[in-house]
Length: 101
Image 1: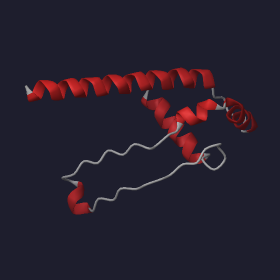
Image 2: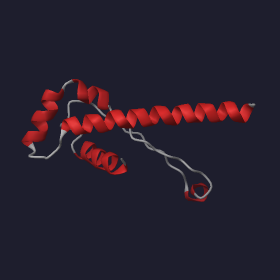
Image 3: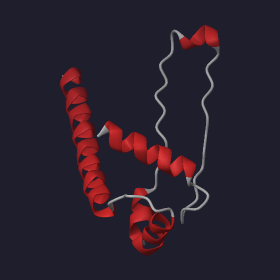
Image 4: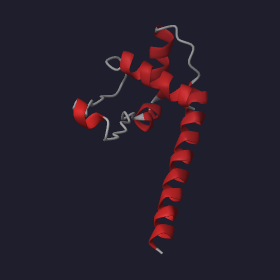
């Protein structure tokens, strides 16, 4: 799963100007003295739902670049990713309930 996200992130960053959606980029800076004590996970925002709504321009873009990307497989993996995210949230909510009681 991580390989999929890494390759997808690299693809989106490399080709973000040519894809049919707009990306916003933000940055978090932690100075060196605080970097050892603070943990700051960063997750890029990827608008897969918006991208998958209209596949025709995306397919044309992939073909024009002569890339070997299976959009059906990517959609299945994204659906699986969403399911895992939902499970993580459910476990976190259950953990909070258990720790409060």
